[in-house]
Image (tube, rainbow, N blue to C red; front, side, top):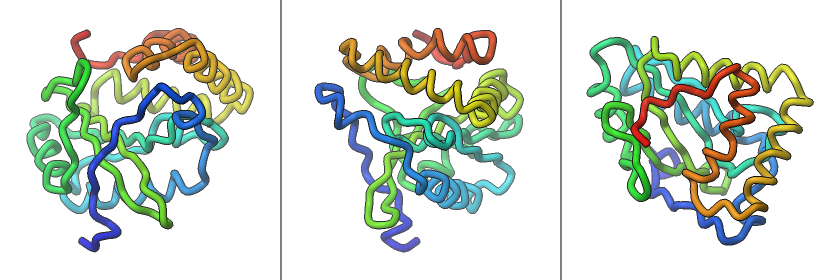
Length: 190
């Protein structure tokens, strides 16, 4: 793997400067997601890898973290974790990390002269969370008015003093619930 393709150390976002955390949608996000998904599939060909989150939705401003959903088939959780570990993704640390039964792996990759932060959510292919994440993405991609509303909701959450990822994600829950008709079923203890 070339140095340009290598997964790099993840740097956590600091929420003390709103303008540094929130950025417009970048048309390079899909290319980054496709490239990293390809790296994952090279190590785990039976996995389905989808680009989700704000960076998967054209015009949706946000934190600029490229979220991928690695969906594994029954009995392949350990293989999914191993594939990501082999690519140098890091285990989540800090406040309230996801358990290893539903891991989140972090990394960054250089693309077009810039470093892009990555989150890889590892979930069972048949889990409610996988279906809900994909449903949320599709609904927003199909409705620019929903995208504008979501961006406004996120800006308001950060402007109100959101201090960390946990608070930021909780602040987004009412909007997500409104769009998919229920909260996204993240398999994680709070």
